[in-house]
Length: 180
Ligand SMILES: [Zn+2]
Image (cartoon, rainbow, N blue to C red; front, side):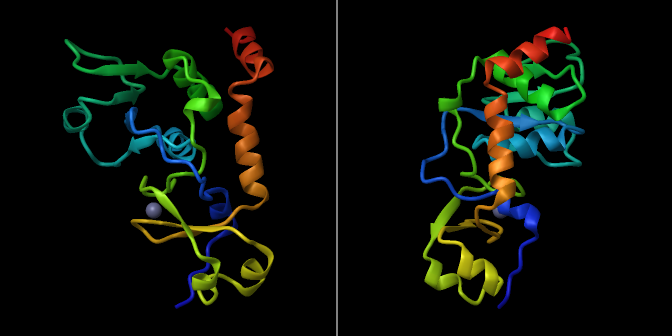
């Protein structure tokens, strides 16, 4: 069976670390890009288009709810009201609201598509499952435990990591402050 991943998927590679178990997020529509980046940062992030806000909040009452919708009435659980439009600024809102540090993250430890944990794979077992040139030019591979997507590091991974690191750099935060 051949499973060829688009270049875009190369960003979602495995980290050796274990995902942080203590924080669980649920992201409301239409914040799909935010949800994807939260997963890339390693956070357990529920995002299911079509689920009503009420059902969503019920399911994640122990978690942190990220939403653009203003709270109506009494709220249970923790909620972060996202105010900005661009995903980088949205992520900075989350980082700032929770006082996150880079060390709280575990980049590329989860599948951005389905949120499951990814596991390191023995390269030999994947020979027929990735394109030959990818198999020959990469040493490290991982696979999603749920949707079985195969990931490997590439230039997109480096760009994604730089994007994540910039959320925590003093310059990045100054830029954010200057717009306020
Ligand atoms: Zn997956």
